[in-house]
Image (cartoon, rainbow, N blue to C red; front, side):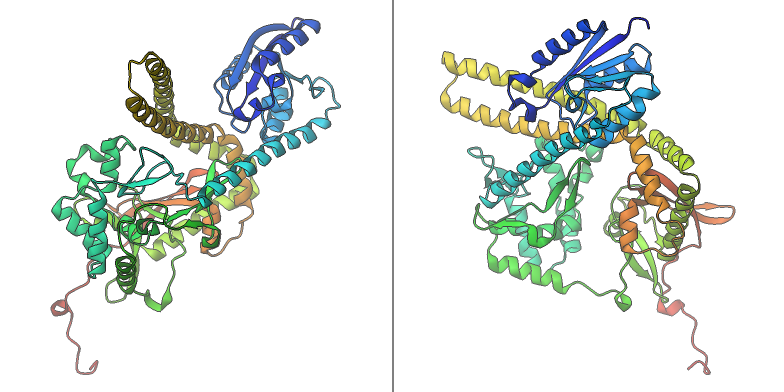
Length: 555
């Protein structure tokens, strides 16, 4: 056997730092280098990911090591133990049992006595499960800490609700925003006077009142460069945002936290039932009185109308406009009361988008047909289904992945700049070049920016990880779809389990008549489904004078 080109891989997360020097990067390097010398391995590269979680496999040096493996530069990978490779037992198992053997790479975890050159590595599976259990335990502790802070009335969201800003003295407290509070008060006054959310949005557009997203954009809290290229979009209010504001008790001075909860390993969030929310009263200054709040909500509630025959759409919350991305709303059309979906942006501003109308029955049939096709494919030919999912995701995520990589690079660069500014501030404070008042103000400013940047970095890392995990996601999607072979009807339950989003394009006229495209984004699978719907022209209802008169017999 010739000289084995060896990679030493070291990793340390913030959670591991509490365990002391035995887990330090320096100690790992020394230990692995000594092991390599004693066993005659030629170390060609040492890869280090310092401060990276074991649940995240999109680590810079880990990816660099995989690239070198793909290039055929590495024969052996050595880590201190299995947990250094990762703490997700499924993904660690994928690398140790599938990926490394497939690439003819030998893997050694020194302290766990795991060596893929030996056949007896049964203990590795148990070790992987225990490593993941450690991360699960940490996750539970963090969740308990978050709920404890919420019960103490500490505001812990990244952004303050519209009408408030985070206090300069305490970023866990809300203070009234002098620039936008009047807008919130006016919304409640108009609603209490009997005006609906759609009408309030229309009034604000006419009066040129800037919308919440414009304020966030101009203040640098969030970025919407494409949206606000058109100056008129700063006045484009959403009735849904207004309706949510009217129902939010934060404007009474109360905090309602923990409405969602992170799903372990998936990097996604689930909604919690209302009884599990944490409400703390009188945590900040209210913007409206209880009387106005109750009156506004009562008026808004009284404006709701029941649908015909108490019909409830199975697509609720899933159908979006293929152009503007906003929701499509269910409407009833014509004398026959046909159910159709219409773009909500177009509904309150016909110049902002097109109607994107589609018959409910056409949408139902298209989605059902797509699910039936892919469920049958996954059941009969699992490998072909997985390959399809990987191929479609690679096509869809290519440009988005590059955009996220650039944004992540910029966020990390700015985070490093802010950290350096922290160091300079401390030096200026110690030397007396800056007053204590200015020191405190600037520290709070940079700390707030640092927290926002960390949130952005985590979000972008998660998005890039989703792209990296397309293979495992494709397998999960195929397994999920195969369980629905033979499906004959759609329900809200099975749709929400299988589908994340449905996008409807506008109608186009062809030689065969009108048609439009329906794109389906599946859970785990992404944008795999696409159906072309042929539909008849949806015409406006005729006015009474245009209707044919009834004959004597009909009367």
